[in-house]
Length: 333
Image 1 (tube, rainbow, N blue to C red):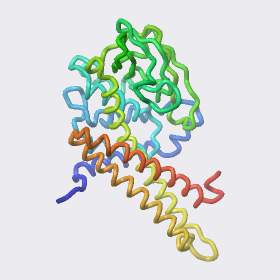
Image 2 (image 1 turned 30 degrees about the vertical axis):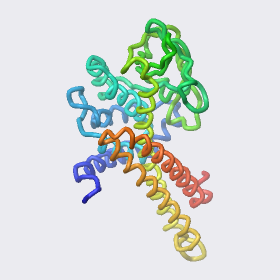
Image 3 (image 1 turned 135 degrees about the horizontal axis):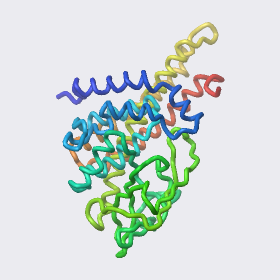
Image 4 (image 1 turned 60 degrees about the horizontal axis):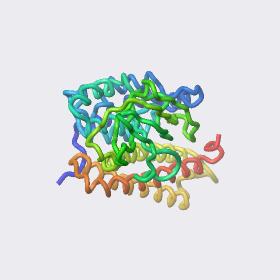
């Protein structure tokens, strides 16, 4: 039995890599970092035209109608390129929430503009630092009007629509859609460790909302949504880890010490082998998650997604550390 991706899926991945190699080199990411712009608008327009923003969205709503196996491979390439665009916020959180929980009217209203890149979406769940749980939600809904604050909100400074978790008058949690350009919404940009991924605090004062999904099911919907987002982000991290490993290998193969390549020393070989194993472990976990999300196996995804995210986070952190160490002084400059 063949558990590999199909040739068509590999072609989608190769096309994504070729496009990003040409249009999203590290110079593009650095330009965003140094200019203070929240993202690269030309790159965002380009990926929208490639159909990536609607990879897992049905064609009847303007999507490409491919599927989640194609989307995870695109996510991997976005992470590999460190593409400075609000891809994860808009695709993994907002678009995915509307696809899964939205009514036909909401799908027809929001999805075509999201997949075309005309609007950027995000998810607003947290209300400060710390873990997210049902008891931590203090934002309130009264008569369809939202009050409270959410932060940090990824790409909240540029998004036009947000999926928000809040409690209704009966204390039940609902998932709602909010137009961030409408009255009752104030944005405050936040400083973060990674300026290529902007964040904001959103203040709501009687902002109009639309219920997304079933009333009182907001927490269950949020858990399901974040599992899917965690898996897709794990693929981004694996893409970044792969590229870090490639760059490190190039460095140690071409750098000489005591008349021989650095890569020939046993201690270096062992560290590179450990790094390779960490990435492959993360990839294995992520592939299990890809199987679960593509077959809509919610119970299995509930285990596979956090496993993939945990393994991918460890691998990416190790890959970044080893890349800096093996580059020596160059790694710091």
